[in-house]
Image 1 (cartoon, rainbow, N blue to C red):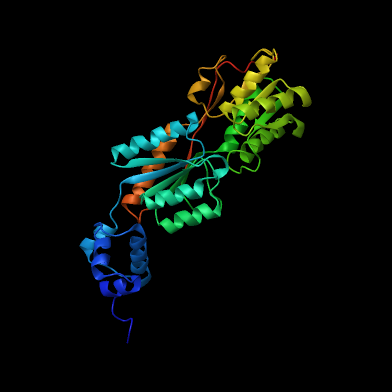
Image 2: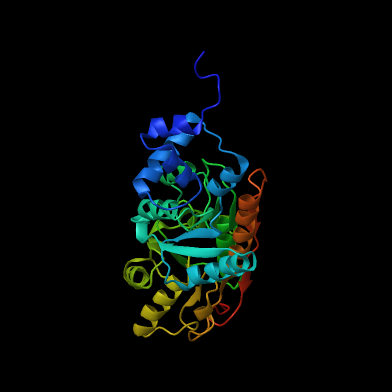
Length: 339
């Protein structure tokens, strides 16, 4: 009866419509054929379930010792801090890193996943944006492990490394309240953003509620994690919102944009207005006055992600767990106690 015998290299050649020699060359990673031929042969190998001998199998499954990392904005200080941690561990363990800039709203994410697939990376670190179904599917098709950083998926069980955003935002807001502020505005990321947008707004609202302060939608403006849009958000708050004495910005970049605009309008910080940020990027220490903020251990997060990913690459059967890393508040000079 046909199909009982394990498929042979001849069967693969026939299915792929190439010679046995070509199949052999592909399996041994020799050259002399096009990428298209290689794809057709590998598809035939997979479809038939052909198992070459152990030596050949070792060549086919040969690792490239590379990791792909996807960032929505490579130029940000936030991304470079995470990358620093990823690369540190990767270098130590003999892996090189390919960095892809997926641009805002993941415009280029699928394209880059395709590039990483062609480069045959051994694993992927996916950061800072929502893992859409189409990305998940593309990664699944690549059959490589993936770790999420600064994001998580409710739907797909993928290990992640992140801070508890809701709790951190709660702490930032509560700190302003402990300093005597009750009229507190917020500059938030997009509320469509289930990762860093909505949960941080939620933490702010909860801190107000727990302290008996009414939440006002008019005191929240969207700054979309960028300097320019946060300047506009600050302008909106100063012209349209009920008066406030303090602002919680859901990122340092937005805090600095807001500070910048407020100072141009002649407001003194922290005398007239207190501001607290979120991230503790390097430049939070360098602005004037230095920014009070929530510290995220970004380089550590990168290191942990790299560790987890390499563990999965080196032992396909291993299990790694997700990690919620701890944040803390860094007091500098942008918040004053309200008499």
